[in-house]
Image (cartoon, rainbow, N blue to C red; front, side, top):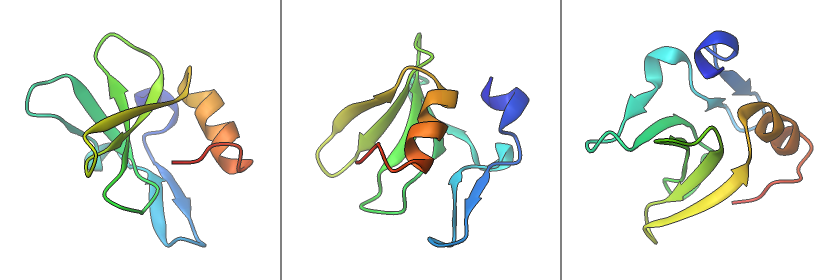
Length: 87
């Protein structure tokens, strides 16, 4: 669904960043287990699809920790925009 509906990314004018990356900025982890699709703009945290899951996760690199944010990208977008999700 990401490549179909989010290929242009989503820009946050308040934070001055694409919190959902444009398709050209998406990247895969070295081991192929994660697809980095966005960021909140703090502490190097990125939004991620993990292999075998349609859910959206936050990866916290300073803690090497995964945080489940939403079951799918549509729920993630709604929750993030509504301020219901935190990293």
